[in-house]
Length: 119
Image (cartoon, rainbow, N blue to C red; front, side):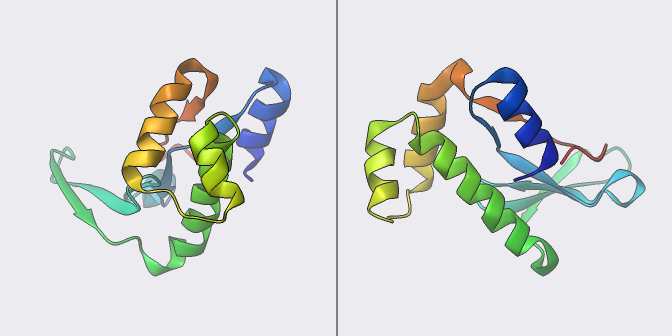
């Protein structure tokens, strides 16, 4: 679990989960990883106006898998159906995970990231 997620858990006294993670930081920022959809999103063009989707880069796959598992655990703690799936070690579908996250509403603190180094 990232330092900022741990800080949110302890300071806010509730679940926090990333829904995205950066591909690179600051001047090396290349795009983001959508942890729900399990895909990379790149913003090409001079001003990032061209959105392109791709596979998660190999060097980020392990970290993305860990963060996605944290997201699933967070949602499973607040959603009975996903909680049962989690206990049965079943992998929730994208639509199940989205529905669970939406149902949580304000209970789930979303960390949206960019190239600023939020981890």
